[in-house]
Image (cartoon, rainbow, N blue to C red; front, side, top):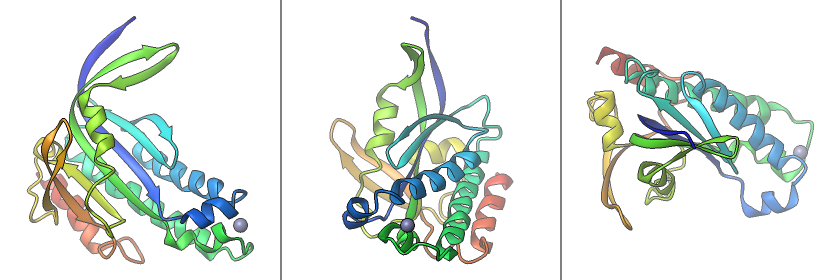
Length: 215
Ligand SMILES: [Zn+2]
């Protein structure tokens, strides 16, 4: 089996917000809404990232170092993915043609993005390409974190921040440390997107992207 090691960004974009009630009662429109929003996010992520897998309400993508040039481009891509999600969400919300629980709850959905950077192994499993290794595991673990109540955010591990070269504080990135089994203390930075991205994109968001590119 052919496999090789690569360095790059590991990104998970996860849609949350439908309650169990909506999931249970609106099977007809719930999953298609998530799929549509996820597809919108995927279009922004890839290229330059490669979509690795759709995992439930989340998408896993990889960006090899050789394609993310300069590294800070990653921040711009993640930001654009969030904007695309919000815009499509607003369109769906404005459509009043259906009164099922899912269609009425579109506005409660949120997007969280986790980005890590490190080495991973690319391998083939049957005829499918797969990424493996501890960094893949860590990126997935980070979706479960102590940021309760914060539902729209971009979380960058310290490794990702260092790699992009962005200065955390001016970029609105707040440091957190959390303990994960087998990984110990993991330091990461969070950019809360609830308030910063308002009705028409946002000055703060643009400033972030501009800042990222200035580095
Ligand atoms: Zn509906």
